[in-house]
Amino acid sequence: MQPNVKLKRQKLGKKFSWTPYLFLLPAIAFLGLTSFLPVLQAIYLSFTDYDFVGSPTFTGWRNYINLFKDQTFWKTLGNTLTYLIFAVPSLVVLPLFLAILVNQKLRSINFFRAIYYFPVIVSVVVAGIAWKWVYAQNGILNYFLSAISFQSVTIPWLTDPKTAIFAIIAVVVWRGVGYYMVIYLAGLQAIPADLYEAAAIDGSDGWQKHWDITIPLMKPYIILVAVISAIGAMKVFEEVYIMSQGGPANSTKTVVYYLYDKGFTSLEMGYASAIGVFLFLIIFIISILTFKFINPAKVIT
Image (cartoon, rainbow, N blue to C red; front, side, top):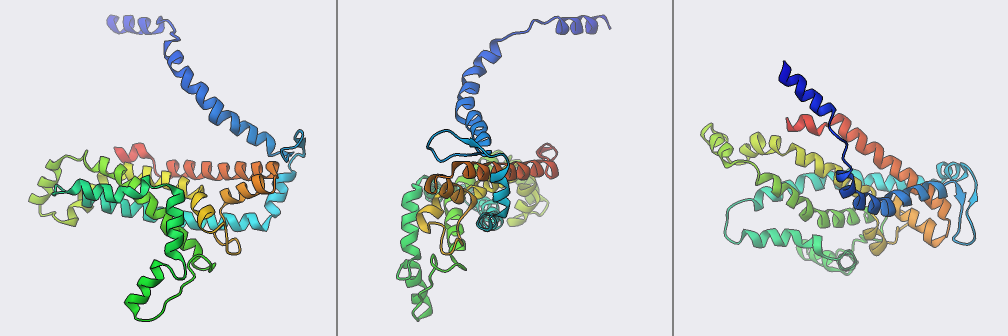
């Protein structure tokens, strides 16, 4: 008992040290200037009328009231949820499948890893322009479909509201698969090979071993990819801006694109800030719900 009492007294009497906080100070200051301060400025501007000329004029809740009455905003929010619903499952499943394939000990496997990762390092502008040519009515995709169907195919991929959003989702998935594959690959390489050998002895071989061993042990990585890809899907902008400019008929316009349009085209910075705050709340709620219903700590244990 006495050693424990002495230990508790030593802990209680331990002097406070500023050293750890001094090491954190540069990072906190950098985050404050680049993240926290702009967030506070956006919240303030969302309650004002500001067009980059003069000083902001306080308008109260008017921007938020107009936001809930804005049909275009709800249209863009629906489009954003479409990106979320269709892109995230693909970005969770396909990279895991590719990671399992490239995790094999085969000759030239590093070459295939590089090929799958290549879209990640390609500039968004270059990728957008290239895919815009592919999706053109006289582009490579329609030419290929015409060749295999032996008849002329001229599908308006980016000019038809029914196909435009899914064409852009395909590009978003194409660019993201390699990035999430690397995350999964790091998790796969941390799984001991002994587990697969034991599973083979028990009769679990082929793809069955991945269902029995890989998927359960990869759940923390799957949750991480799901959260990151969901946040990314809610912020799609570059692909839309380059490939369709939000058209046709706002069928591909996202909330972030609408924010850009209002803030830097119409110069309604107060209204754009209200859109940004609303989007932040949506992403925050999605993140909280994800960690509430899928607790990473429980998954790991």
